[in-house]
Image 1 (cartoon, rainbow over the protein chains, first blue to last red):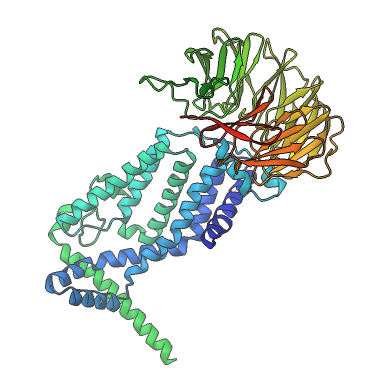
Image 2: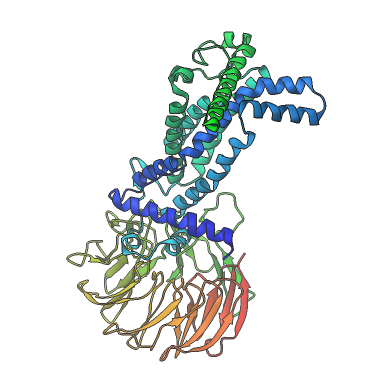
Length: 295
Length: 313
């Protein structure tokens, strides 16, 4: 077997499949509860990566006005690139910082997606595929087939509209929390598209695949919302902002959705404040580092 | 589903759905083996519907709906056709009209993917709830005082011969039961899941498994008849076919083996170029193979020579 195939099957897929079946046994044969617990555990394991991703993405979005200034100021692409990298170094931001954790997590989420499909064993093909992945312990072998009913949903069937709507709603909330406040009209329009496009796409996907997967997406979304809220805190995110159907625009202080008009008038000041905060954090870290080196 | 005239391989009689109209049924997939009885072909689609077609031209006579996907095939007894569904139930329809025979379908605790067997006024059905049930063919009432409980889910089709019922489980274990009472007579432990139907002849039970092994077991005791199981290259999904002294076995890698039924030694092996997942069909001393790529092949069990009958569209 090639190394990638070995990694994919023996390191990711098979352990995840068996873990999911053990959880089903532990939770009284409920595959739905197993998916929920498994999603929470997996999100917990990948939490440090998620946190790095959140931090990097926030820091990068805070730098956008300064990057735009550099782009306006310098026409030479080489100089632009140098100045941008200099800015990143000054405030201690790694542009790859939000990409790398996402890249590391992606195989895990793809594997989980496949594992749920296989573990449900809705077709003879997936059931036989499952047989090749199970560890030879009777505790696992005898658990097949897994119970497909969970609450009102048949996890092996597709097209549960209520579950699809829940996925869309969780995705909408996550988008609301993730999309940085817009500083100009172009970004505002892009943010609006993102805010609605992702939930609608996921509602569509949810109707096309076995309901076990939308359940995983919904749970993963919920965990993401909680993590995001823990990271942002109540100062930077207000639940009331969810009532606004438009993405936030940049402003000074308070909840992003509360004063959209005021925000549009003073974007530069807000971004200055955020960037300055990033710079302060960077300088503080540098001082701390120097002190440690002296010791 | 394609009907072929065996007397002339080039003559494809009909196809269902015919592919001509807009409002044709969408079977989605066809897993179970169709059954022919009194001029009618019965087949179960993964769309959850049992179809009754005219044997001559493939025209639809009637359809019967279940509430889940159909994976197993139908079984016909007298004037009733029986079929299991992923909705956990076993259904009985009148062969001529498609009217339900029982007031309510007979429901088990999990999906019914195996094909039921009708024998002496009783329908035997294995379910993925790990149980084998015996049901009165006329009324749908249970025949045994309690169903037989296996150690794992059951997808293979039971075989009833000389008052014994043989069935394999997804636990590597193969069971022989008293067909009248459902009590265990013996069981045999193999090395992988048993997916397909066993072949029984002259007091020997032949069964293949997903590990690619074929076992010959004594029908009375469950003891191994061959010194060691035959080892195929790939998993054995479809039922084997016994023609005279030769046991023909096909695997997922497209190998067709001719085994000496008495000793288990390999007499010949042939390659068909595509995996074989469907049951092998024996008719008039020949074995018909439906390969994964749609090819329908004729295998001569005496020497393993293969000829192409045609390719399904």
